[in-house]
Length: 194
Image 1 (spheres, helix red, strand yellow):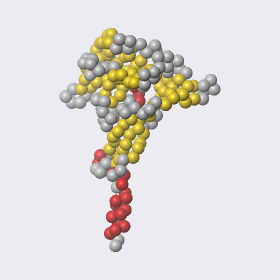
Image 2 (cartoon, helix red, strand yellow):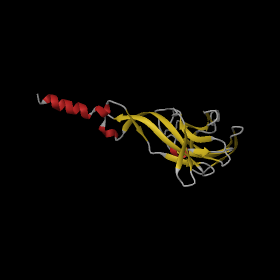
Image 3 (cartoon, one colour):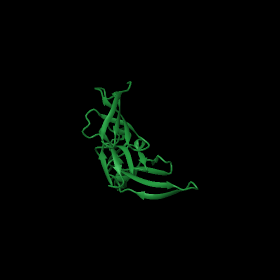
Image 4 (tube, helix red, strand yellow):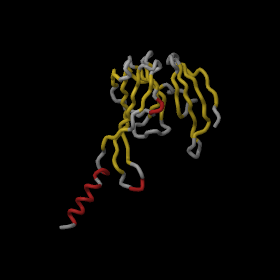
Protein backbone atom coordinates (compact mmCIF):
# COMPACT_ATOMS: atom_id res chain seq x y z
CA UNK A 1 0.00 0.00 0.00
CA UNK A 2 2.94 2.35 0.56
CA UNK A 3 3.79 1.99 -3.11
CA UNK A 4 0.60 3.71 -4.34
CA UNK A 5 1.25 7.06 -2.55
CA UNK A 6 4.85 6.99 -3.78
CA UNK A 7 3.72 6.45 -7.37
CA UNK A 8 1.05 9.15 -6.98
CA UNK A 9 3.63 11.65 -5.68
CA UNK A 10 5.99 10.77 -8.53
CA UNK A 11 3.19 11.21 -11.09
CA UNK A 12 2.00 14.55 -9.67
CA UNK A 13 5.54 15.90 -9.54
CA UNK A 14 5.99 15.17 -13.25
CA UNK A 15 2.71 16.77 -14.40
CA UNK A 16 4.65 19.84 -15.48
CA UNK A 17 6.34 17.56 -18.01
CA UNK A 18 2.98 16.45 -19.41
CA UNK A 19 0.84 19.58 -19.64
CA UNK A 20 1.64 22.74 -21.59
CA UNK A 21 1.20 26.06 -19.74
CA UNK A 22 1.24 29.66 -20.95
CA UNK A 23 4.37 31.66 -20.23
CA UNK A 24 5.67 35.06 -21.33
CA UNK A 25 8.91 36.96 -21.75
CA UNK A 26 9.62 40.26 -20.02
CA UNK A 27 8.00 43.29 -21.69
CA UNK A 28 10.06 45.53 -23.94
CA UNK A 29 9.27 49.05 -25.14
CA UNK A 30 9.92 51.38 -28.06
CA UNK A 31 9.41 55.14 -28.05
CA UNK A 32 7.79 56.72 -31.10
CA UNK A 33 9.77 59.24 -33.13
CA UNK A 34 8.07 62.12 -31.26
CA UNK A 35 8.74 60.66 -27.81
CA UNK A 36 5.06 61.13 -26.93
CA UNK A 37 3.95 57.51 -27.45
CA UNK A 38 5.22 54.05 -26.59
CA UNK A 39 4.79 50.60 -28.04
CA UNK A 40 4.94 47.74 -25.52
CA UNK A 41 5.82 44.26 -26.75
CA UNK A 42 5.07 41.05 -24.88
CA UNK A 43 5.98 37.60 -26.21
CA UNK A 44 3.74 34.68 -25.13
CA UNK A 45 4.40 30.98 -25.62
CA UNK A 46 3.50 27.52 -24.35
CA UNK A 47 6.02 25.61 -22.25
CA UNK A 48 6.41 22.43 -20.27
CA UNK A 49 9.27 20.83 -18.41
CA UNK A 50 11.49 18.51 -20.38
CA UNK A 51 11.52 14.81 -19.56
CA UNK A 52 15.31 15.03 -19.63
CA UNK A 53 16.60 16.88 -16.55
CA UNK A 54 19.93 17.47 -18.31
CA UNK A 55 18.28 19.75 -20.90
CA UNK A 56 18.53 22.69 -18.51
CA UNK A 57 15.48 24.39 -19.98
CA UNK A 58 11.82 23.84 -20.76
CA UNK A 59 10.27 22.79 -24.07
CA UNK A 60 8.62 25.77 -25.78
CA UNK A 61 6.22 26.21 -28.70
CA UNK A 62 3.53 28.46 -30.21
CA UNK A 63 5.16 31.87 -29.81
CA UNK A 64 2.87 34.88 -30.31
CA UNK A 65 3.42 38.63 -29.93
CA UNK A 66 1.16 41.20 -28.28
CA UNK A 67 1.71 44.91 -28.94
CA UNK A 68 0.07 47.64 -26.86
CA UNK A 69 0.28 51.35 -27.68
CA UNK A 70 0.24 54.01 -24.98
CA UNK A 71 0.34 57.80 -24.92
CA UNK A 72 2.55 59.64 -22.44
CA UNK A 73 0.38 62.24 -20.66
CA UNK A 74 1.74 65.68 -19.61
CA UNK A 75 1.94 64.43 -15.99
CA UNK A 76 4.11 61.51 -17.29
CA UNK A 77 1.37 58.96 -16.72
CA UNK A 78 0.60 56.43 -19.43
CA UNK A 79 -2.76 56.16 -21.14
CA UNK A 80 -3.37 52.94 -23.09
CA UNK A 81 -4.57 53.89 -26.56
CA UNK A 82 -4.88 50.54 -28.32
CA UNK A 83 -3.94 46.89 -28.22
CA UNK A 84 -3.33 44.86 -31.35
CA UNK A 85 -4.67 41.36 -31.64
CA UNK A 86 -2.03 38.76 -30.95
CA UNK A 87 0.26 38.27 -33.91
CA UNK A 88 0.99 34.63 -34.76
CA UNK A 89 4.76 35.02 -34.81
CA UNK A 90 7.52 36.06 -32.44
CA UNK A 91 9.21 39.46 -32.60
CA UNK A 92 12.75 40.05 -31.39
CA UNK A 93 12.28 42.55 -28.53
CA UNK A 94 15.30 44.73 -29.42
CA UNK A 95 14.06 45.11 -32.98
CA UNK A 96 10.74 46.92 -32.40
CA UNK A 97 10.45 50.45 -33.85
CA UNK A 98 7.25 52.53 -33.70
CA UNK A 99 6.49 55.50 -35.94
CA UNK A 100 3.48 57.45 -34.73
CA UNK A 101 3.27 59.80 -37.75
CA UNK A 102 3.14 57.04 -40.37
CA UNK A 103 1.28 54.65 -38.04
CA UNK A 104 3.70 51.77 -38.63
CA UNK A 105 5.79 49.34 -36.63
CA UNK A 106 9.03 47.85 -37.97
CA UNK A 107 10.42 44.63 -36.48
CA UNK A 108 12.33 41.40 -36.99
CA UNK A 109 9.99 38.44 -36.67
CA UNK A 110 10.20 34.68 -36.88
CA UNK A 111 9.04 32.64 -39.83
CA UNK A 112 8.36 29.58 -37.66
CA UNK A 113 6.20 29.97 -34.55
CA UNK A 114 8.20 27.28 -32.72
CA UNK A 115 11.77 28.49 -33.37
CA UNK A 116 12.27 31.59 -31.22
CA UNK A 117 15.42 33.57 -31.96
CA UNK A 118 16.74 31.28 -34.69
CA UNK A 119 18.18 32.47 -38.02
CA UNK A 120 14.82 31.59 -39.61
CA UNK A 121 13.46 35.18 -39.49
CA UNK A 122 12.51 38.16 -41.61
CA UNK A 123 11.88 41.92 -41.37
CA UNK A 124 8.30 43.21 -41.43
CA UNK A 125 6.37 46.47 -41.37
CA UNK A 126 3.00 46.47 -39.61
CA UNK A 127 0.59 49.13 -40.87
CA UNK A 128 -2.08 50.25 -38.37
CA UNK A 129 -4.40 51.49 -41.12
CA UNK A 130 -4.55 48.23 -43.07
CA UNK A 131 -3.88 46.07 -39.96
CA UNK A 132 -1.46 43.94 -41.99
CA UNK A 133 2.22 43.17 -41.86
CA UNK A 134 4.38 43.12 -44.95
CA UNK A 135 7.57 41.08 -45.31
CA UNK A 136 10.11 43.71 -46.41
CA UNK A 137 12.96 41.36 -47.38
CA UNK A 138 10.92 38.79 -49.29
CA UNK A 139 12.47 38.36 -52.72
CA UNK A 140 15.70 40.18 -51.77
CA UNK A 141 18.24 37.35 -52.03
CA UNK A 142 21.13 39.59 -50.95
CA UNK A 143 19.61 39.87 -47.46
CA UNK A 144 20.36 36.53 -45.81
CA UNK A 145 19.76 36.58 -42.03
CA UNK A 146 18.59 39.90 -40.53
CA UNK A 147 20.31 40.67 -37.22
CA UNK A 148 19.28 44.25 -36.44
CA UNK A 149 17.25 47.09 -37.91
CA UNK A 150 16.72 50.83 -37.47
CA UNK A 151 13.79 52.86 -38.78
CA UNK A 152 14.38 56.45 -39.89
CA UNK A 153 12.48 59.18 -38.03
CA UNK A 154 10.18 59.81 -40.99
CA UNK A 155 9.69 56.04 -41.58
CA UNK A 156 10.80 56.36 -45.18
CA UNK A 157 13.98 54.27 -44.83
CA UNK A 158 14.90 51.11 -42.98
CA UNK A 159 18.48 50.05 -42.24
CA UNK A 160 19.09 46.30 -41.97
CA UNK A 161 22.27 44.59 -40.80
CA UNK A 162 22.39 41.03 -42.04
CA UNK A 163 24.87 38.17 -42.14
CA UNK A 164 25.38 34.61 -43.30
CA UNK A 165 26.13 31.48 -41.28
CA UNK A 166 29.43 29.72 -41.88
CA UNK A 167 29.93 25.96 -41.65
CA UNK A 168 30.62 26.25 -37.88
CA UNK A 169 27.35 28.07 -37.22
CA UNK A 170 28.90 31.52 -36.68
CA UNK A 171 27.76 34.73 -38.36
CA UNK A 172 30.04 36.27 -40.99
CA UNK A 173 29.84 38.44 -44.13
CA UNK A 174 27.99 41.26 -42.36
CA UNK A 175 26.30 43.80 -44.64
CA UNK A 176 24.29 46.96 -44.12
CA UNK A 177 21.37 47.60 -46.47
CA UNK A 178 19.28 50.76 -46.68
CA UNK A 179 15.76 50.09 -47.94
CA UNK A 180 13.48 52.81 -49.30
CA UNK A 181 10.11 51.86 -47.83
CA UNK A 182 8.10 53.88 -50.37
CA UNK A 183 9.39 51.70 -53.22
CA UNK A 184 10.45 48.67 -51.10
CA UNK A 185 13.80 48.62 -52.86
CA UNK A 186 17.40 48.48 -51.64
CA UNK A 187 18.95 51.93 -52.11
CA UNK A 188 22.47 51.07 -50.97
CA UNK A 189 24.47 48.22 -49.48
CA UNK A 190 27.95 47.87 -48.16
CA UNK A 191 30.03 45.29 -46.31
CA UNK A 192 30.76 45.66 -42.61
CA UNK A 193 33.91 44.26 -40.96
CA UNK A 194 33.61 40.75 -39.51
